Length: 168
Image (cartoon, rainbow, N blue to C red; front, side):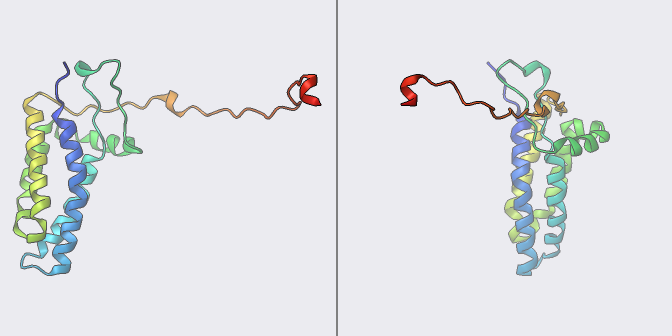
């Protein structure tokens, strides 16, 4: 039986949280709530969360089997190459969990950013569970065979052969 990969849940939850942070930040600024500068903070945080969460992790070698394949998101290799240079801070899920927990606390100050802040804290908890299960971020290697050019077949120059009954 396959084990649950908590980091996959955390990654999907983080991707969903980024637009919520953006919308909550816009509502805080437009609504001029008492803590409306938190809305500006939340807008910046939404882009940061999206950049960190867009590159999807591959399956660890211990959990791979023939039926499960790694599918990357479109154009994720550019961000994955950039973020993998952060080393242990990006590959290990404990620093990411702590970062999301600390960055999510100010989101609880404004009415329109409470729900996105709670979602960011849930993402931090999911990454913490993934850390305790000894999961880490694995870069998905691009396969060359996926990008083969499709050869276009030429149209036939002669018509197909027909029987005498089809000609009449």
